[in-house]
Image: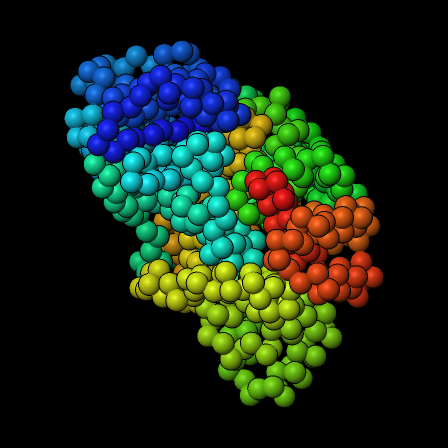
Length: 627
């Protein structure tokens, strides 16, 4: 892992005397991403730096930037290429290497394949290559979006970095809110690519590369797409074996490390099966780390303990308390974009507690996207079923009857969406996955804010272009949407920024692109079978895990935010939401916000996600604009 950054001037030479202090400042800003070594290279019209976290080949020979013998090609690289030794032995035999690093292999592969090198890489990465001969900067991001690249440009220069805070530290970059991005945040709780929350600063989307010439010509291309159309018609037993073999291979290649390694274990099926396979593939005992809470309905430590006992791991537990006043500003700074996923809290504490024990951890991220694991996929299937029935009488009776049986618990969630069932699927899914739905936005947001964000591009209108011809049924349509937006812009951003805050590398076997290409070939009925999520993964997991672990109800990696905002954090929440500085921004209607808060704290309604959304927006403005 590393923090990378660079600057390319258009049609002008760089003033080394003025730029070196800027480089030094950015190195300090990104140092948490790579505390083991800092290096940079200056050219006539640009500079490139890398702060390195040493994982593979921890010797100085593997330090960055990596530069060709003639000095004409310079690479700064963040990530891991898991197949670098295979690439080295097959395609790069003619070269001599000074290190055993994946970064040096990537430089050589670029020399051989130019931008075509991307199709050979298996791993997570964000990198930039300056080619002096072609006067071209080549930037790329991995297929799933595990590693970030953010960038800014104007008529004079192009700037990129692993984190926004590095770009924002430069004097030529203005710090101005992007209301289009904030409008999107107020729906989903995160900012979708290519926006960032700051006007004029963007994210390179996953599975994309960019070329920038020294004359200022910028071009972005996609190099990979997940396609659900080429299905394999195989018996369930064959699918179980295929998945097991590929997931085991994905785990095995992610165990390569020259530093201590562990697993983040929640106690759910995804991280539990990764723990099982890692334990079997490792030569020694695996270290595992689990987060828990005092509130029993949210705590999963008892389930994690069963897995650690079964596989004899070296286990550590971290109990999270609601006293977040001290870490909240730190999180708002580190997450840098408007961001409101409540799981940021346990993720932060988990990364903090893991540091000092290991430098690399595996996790179960991606299991839900591969196997239709989120309850919202099941919810949409219910909705599609109900849309075919006479409305609303039969639906209402059916809902009452099913809910009274207590067997289909998602119907109580679906009931509030009954008036929206006439919407098309994309619109309905957007409402279901929104924190602030259409009604709440009209009530809570001020006319001033609504006017500012009205120019927002409607994401629903873009979905048909994204999805056209790449899925076979509705479940896969929603999975593909989440892989394109929710996975990279929420889950991967959260994991990357939280882990890098503590100089920790995270690896996700379920997000191996070859594994995801395999699951895309699977009939969706083996993922969401009837109303059972993760059907085939659960069948496969029974070989490694107790049935009670496999088939227990999904909890998710969430803190008891509903209870915290009623009790422990109630006063802190109120003081921040109704501070003069925040209300002066004229973003929310204070009387309506007070009503939501009172209803929540009195237990009349659960507005926890809405209140947390506004609370985090308040934190973003407070940290980045001192308001």
